[in-house]
Length: 80
Image (tube, rainbow, N blue to C red; front, side, top):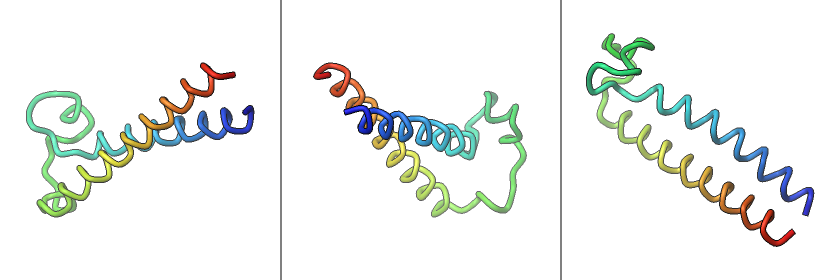
């Protein structure tokens, strides 16, 4: 059980950092935190709607992995 707990904690840490990176990469919709980090400047790299859709999909997949790891940690803690 300790190996499972350590593995799930590692997954939570990695997926959390990846989620932060993905969320900061999203195009800003208005004045907010994304503008503070340079989201207000339009760039030619993220202007495609296909890139935005892929970024949305990656963000959803990473959040599902994060949620599953959190639930797994809760189950491990409950039945330990």
